[in-house]
Length: 117
Image (cartoon, rainbow, N blue to C red; front, side, top):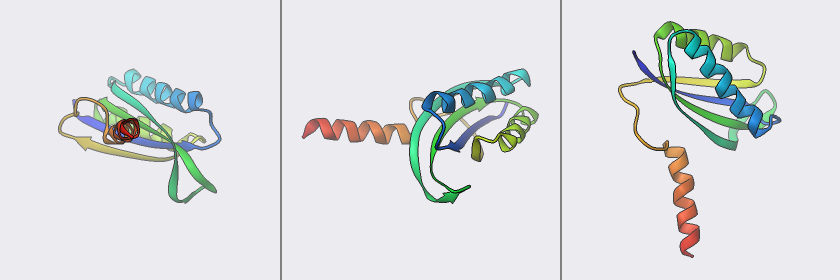
């Protein structure tokens, strides 16, 4: 099956657990349609470059999936209809990289530099 990476931005007024619940919800949509959720990350609340729906910040969520195209299309359709989801980006990749994503590695690097001071 094809491999995909998805980044989703949810509204800033959600709690962290509600935002992570979106991953569970949309991961369930994938598994119902024959795919599987390989990995997931919650990147936290970040400031966006421009306003989206009058929001300056948003919860960033990342998913790695292994699913057929119709399952991904159905998940994207439901994401776009969901009131809490502001933006979705899906990219087809050749392989999933092991370990945390680049966003999570940056946070780890900052923490280790802070400890060295």
